[in-house]
Length: 216
Image (cartoon, rainbow, N blue to C red; front, side, top):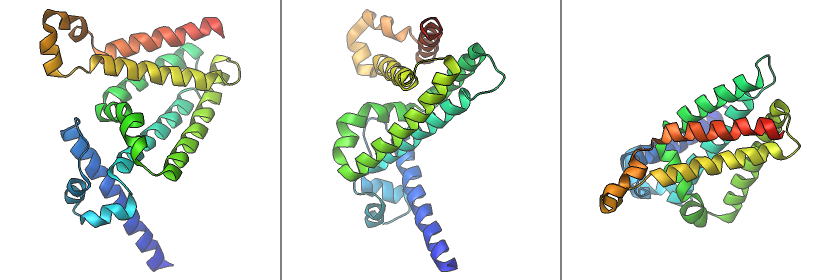
């Protein structure tokens, strides 16, 4: 039992090392996914070891993204848990925490933009199905908590969370303009450079979530 436990811990440690190395490399150059060989070198492992844990490099990053998504659902459940706070206080706290969390992780926003077009197209279908099922369950659970807190109809909580995700990603992609594109835009670029992502996200979410109070 002891030997098995140690072996399991060692495998988990290697898997975690691969994920940490992949994220570190992506943070250094978010314009492209690093190769499996580069990730192995960063983690201090042989290239073949990476493929013992992940079938493709895209699966590594899909795993990183999935962990973040599920963790966000847990944060939402905590933010809207039943307690003595008012609904407005819960919304205020949630938006403040959410914006800080998202803006502190620009690599995750970048991975989100690659989710459907790159990552999901290059992982095994069984693995993708497992990701989707777990995320769907987490979303439904968080949605139920939001419904109870805001007095929304059944199913509306998950809908609100999907809308908030779409709003977040849409704003991020609209304002994440490469320097060379901004240069080509000339004076017209000020329409985008004058907008701060964190500020605009907070304002947009605040308007959206406050509006829910009048339509509940």
